[in-house]
Image 1 (cartoon, rainbow, N blue to C red):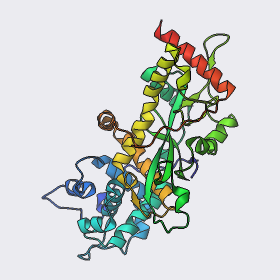
Image 2 (image 1 turned 60 degrees about the horizontal axis):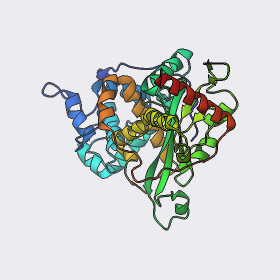
Image 3 (image 1 turned 45 degrees about the vertical axis):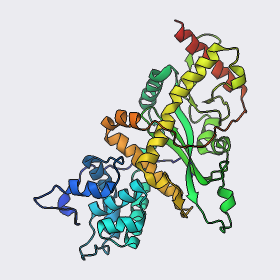
Image 4 (image 1 turned 120 degrees about the vertical axis):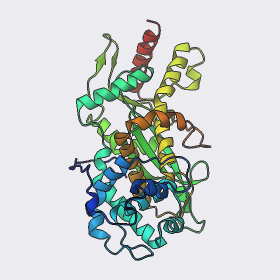
Length: 384
């Protein structure tokens, strides 16, 4: 799945609860949300932490699709399964990764009903919520992103941080294509590449590639890279600091990526031995791009269906599930700004525990020149 081209759709932010049916509508004794949130979280003592306003907004997005497809769903007591219960079931599945059987027992549904509800939710979200995951469309929005990145550790004109994570799969050894999915850690996995803004929102994703494919190859084959090569992305205002030094728009990534005119990676270890300035550059570079690592860690912590070792997943459907988890990740941020600082403190560990850093030594001359300009700028800023 390549980066998404999105057309904005009319957003629905209000729900009319008189139109909703289902077991979660309690009268009098307990607020329906208090009861429902317990079912969504299950036995978890940690995120997903979905506030009521966010849940209602998600319901408003999928309401029309679910209303036209779900008339035959019913609980074990014969009552019809309403909108809020269907959304709760899907969020429980995506948020906990619990089996269809476990979730069905919690809600009073058959495991096949849980499966159907979850997939119909995924289908609706990938169409109705795409406006929550897109590259900045206005100069004002991009300027805000660049300003926030510069406030982290001083990198000017930075538009994003890129990283990848592996979604591990439990595939039968007898499956004909199982070796294709073996990564360098000898796990079966699917890769998610994400470009992230300073608020930990995903701005561009690529998923569906086998885990054995190198990060640099995934990026080079991406639509984002092709747009950059055509001059149609990262083509905004160039900052000019002197006759010899100018800094164009760019993103930053780790050493698994090539050094390009619009993708800045750290200096190699051998270049640091005699240069304190380059060592400091790498430190600031790491602290800036950590926003991408935190975003991917938060994604996997909140939407645990993609955190563990997925049991024999449908590899054609999995990229769509990953996309919807990314959309939900962004929606939570868009709806709940107050959650960000709390989660930044909570999610500090690596999203790909046990995976060693890959190294790509490809370097473009224009990329080298841009990195030197950034080095000079940051060094001057530190000593001014």
